[in-house]
Length: 250
Image (cartoon, rainbow, N blue to C red; front, side, top):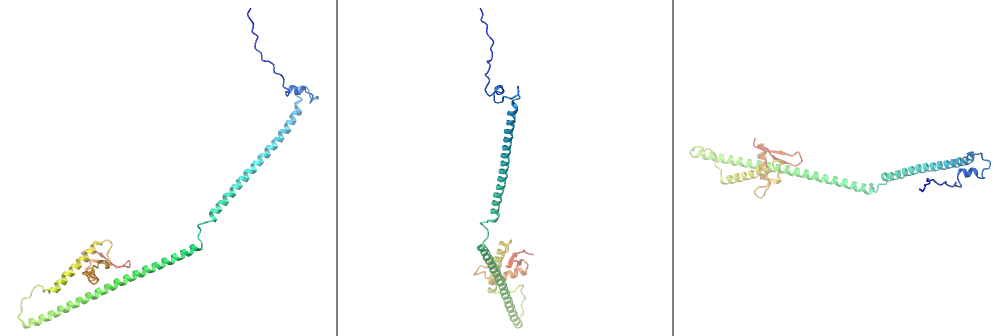
């Protein structure tokens, strides 16, 4: 015979001792009504405990808020103290020694400025003295040359009165000394012009053109005076130092 299989059935679970049914049948609440009426006293205790828990949670929340405010206030206080240290406590701040050093430095700068001004004045005075000396020498040379020419003219006049007349020549003959002096003066003039052309953009001082023994200060000054009179060279003393600039042939 074929065997019949019994359907699978879930076994019944035993009722736990803490179940509602056992609680309702227990003797803890003998006067509890039938059904769910026994829950009322249990729920009242649960509500009381829940309210106590809520009160504790609110207390913890208030404590957390107080701690947050304290942390924020304390952090602000620390930040303010840090900023106060940065704005008040300056290790590199100036001291009395710093002010004394600054005063000494200012006095030294004033002394250096006065010395530089004095040196410029001395240079200007030396240049002016050199100009006056050159002008005096040039005047003496011109007077001497004029005297020589007058003497030669008077001598020639006296000779012409006694000697027979000759046909006048086109140019007066120069002596060997005058020719040599003229050649030397021409070389000096060429050297001075060369120095002016070399330093054309920025100008040149009189001292820079002196090249002894041939080109002394008096000769350089004489050449420069002649060039300035012919407006070939421009003299400039706006900066406190006398400079000569090449202006070109007009």
